[in-house]
Amino acid sequence: MARPKPSTVGNLAISQVPLGDRVQAAAYVAGLTAELATLVRRHRLDTLGCLLDMVRLEAEETIQRAGHPSDADRQPAAE
Image (tube, rainbow, N blue to C red; front, top):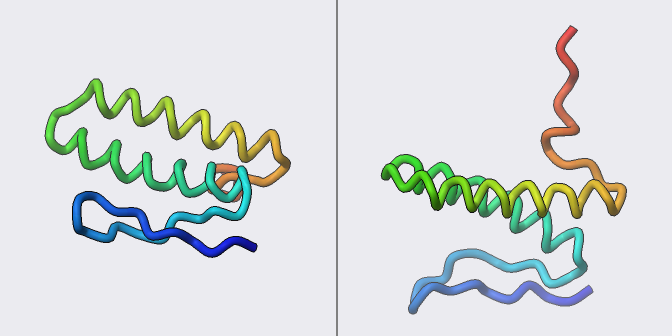
């Protein structure tokens, strides 16, 4: 498996970027965009929040098409 590559913004290291496969990358993008959407909405950047939600949904769909459940699918159903 390929080693993760550090993600950077300027000179600041953000996190390890998974380079293994499409599903791993999509899961990383889904998690990251969910956090970013929360951040931008906190600062009233609603259009950016909507765009990030669209990216997250596309990433989650990629995961589902590959047969891997997303975090939303792992939650128990309400009785």
